[in-house]
Length: 126
Image (cartoon, rainbow, N blue to C red):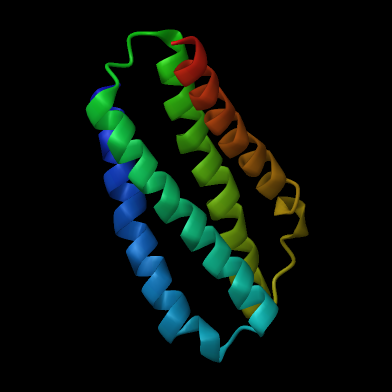
């Protein structure tokens, strides 16, 4: 599990930088400001959770169930939250209708909150 967490941290960091640069240089020419702002939110949340996953990857052994649940919540949450935002922004830029992805974003956000809540519980209860 340690390698999986570090792998996702590296992947999220790598693509977070690429998506951030893409948004800053290419998308600002083709997306309305409110859509670009949503895209930037996806990048920001992805990069924040990249750092958290890196820290967890070096400090947790992922033997306790709660440690695995924290990391899983963050990984799946980033994929659903940021991934759905990227897809919705792409759809908007291409004139596609992908509104069915709209409900995925809050599910991803809920998983991110779950990860933070579990981390808080882990720190309190130990």
